[in-house]
Image 1 (cartoon, helix red, strand yellow):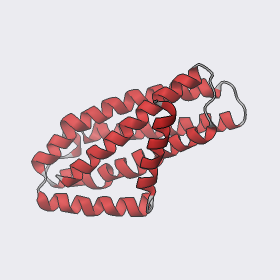
Image 2: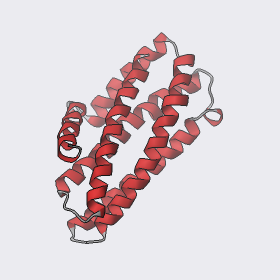
Image 3: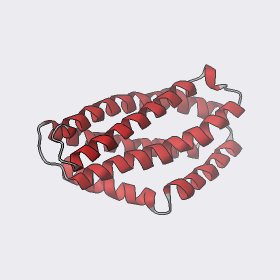
Image 4: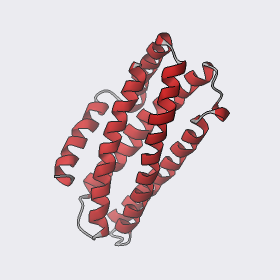
Length: 184
């Protein structure tokens, strides 16, 4: 299924960002300098790419398609995944709050940011594994080619309307830059 393959590719990008986040958190824990611009870009990636793009594709398209295929939300992993998306949003808000404190010169904000990163990484690693081993196989089993095509149309609309033209590519460029900076 094309739609599931697209979501899997997005997982790879999110997993790359998790590796970058781990390296950045380590620097912050050691009280090493990390440019605020990089931290802001990372949080933007999480908020826009992971949530407004990837999670929106699941919440607004894939999950309803599964429900229409006869899998009620209460009896399959969607309910748990939705709760995890909400937890991710709370953690992203906490990252933003720590960033604001860093901008103000608060020396305790870096370690707080790093602690939230740790929680976010734990959440996302398990979340992605659930989607890979439970959600995606369910979708591949219960959705047909027409539904896959409809999902791809919906995914395109989400990218255009919520993320914006060219942003997906810009986020991949950001990943390449941050990878060179923090993972080399």
